[in-house]
Length: 96
View 1 (cartoon, rainbow, N blue to C red):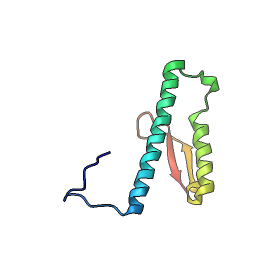
View 2 (spheres, helix red, strand yellow):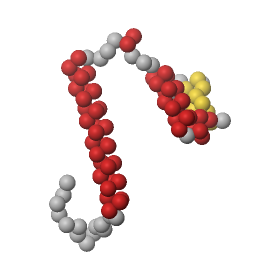
View 3 (cartoon, rainbow, N blue to C red):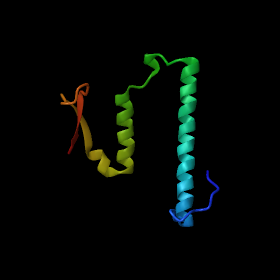
């Protein structure tokens, strides 16, 4: 981004740390590009019909299952339907 040399208020990173930071920046840029492409598709084609969509509950459960396989501690987190004190929220997280 900036080609200016590091001034007295900065400190150089170790080469490995700088490489990791560049890799993170590249991943973040790729994620933003993918999101922008989806938004452009929606702007061009409109939203899909509801029957063709996957509910957020199904997506959540699938993601929690994946996380549970990767990190067993996550699999102890369960969701239960209950009344919450937060307006508009109809479920609460329970940790067992």
